[in-house]
Length: 436
Image (tube, rainbow, N blue to C red; front, side, top):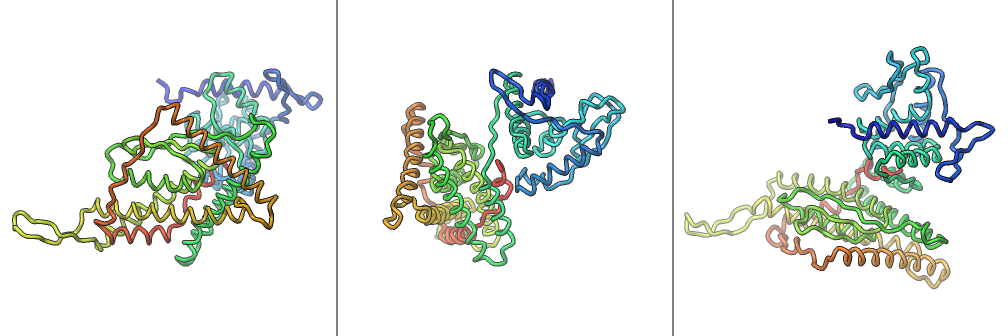
């Protein structure tokens, strides 16, 4: 059994792509596939591995200058060296080196841009096998390297070889701007300055969402518009303490970004319903804040500043004062943290909507009405999509897993949770940079 079941099909697809590219000439630069005509441009050829190395540096430099984030791997140097064997090009993860066969051993087939970018994708994706994640990264890399038509053809080649279609997208730079904002947050010198970045990030996300809503309203053909989608998201394993509070944190972030959710009865997973751009922002903010919430809570628990409660000691036959259970303090902290984060995000969202003209303004009726109508249409689209999902899946119940509050049992922990949420800032640059 191979650990790389898609390898053969991926190689066959790339051979198909190479044949299409090789069929073009300066005099006849187009290729017709499935009745559609494409003009991909030439597949660059190299004379030796050294010239391929210069190309790799050029591509990585382009990614960096355009703030395209591949989990930070675009910042790393990738070497290119010749290899003795002629049948394979390989990426050596330990040394971050692409090994290509030179002309002298019969490596002409490997000294071309698509082969080099294939190996570079192993580096940028972190995938050793030819998984869907690898393929999505390869398509994205072709687009980011200025070869969008080649990416289209590769997608067709994947389909022709029976490979599962993968999602990839080109962002307009907003997520990269968010990532830059986060880098500035990390360099902030005081707590008050850091506290402002969460609101700034949510405001930017809201403005971006409003702009997309207006753009969708101007799309002439309904089939050409971005449509709501449903995406499953795993919260944690069954039986893990605190999952309902994790869900509540994600729900509060989702609400601020115009998403609706269905939740599993055991709080181990949920499904996000809404527009893909809003889902991407919501996941990025959640994954950053979840790490901060857990870390801040653990620091509080280690501090020894614990709530106390009076309990009956049966052996001593009297009431005694003891610290509340660790899990009680933790849940109270999480509960307060999630509530305050939701409040902060909603405040930032409302301010951004007002600034964007999503609320009717008598001073600029034409602009504000258009924007308000676009935002309202977006809300209707998500509402209708969510209602249909509930009907189709026969979902009628209400999630109630976090209704039993722990705040009153551990008010000191809850207060610490509020303070932690007030100073929270986004720090997951990696997550926000994806789809860049």
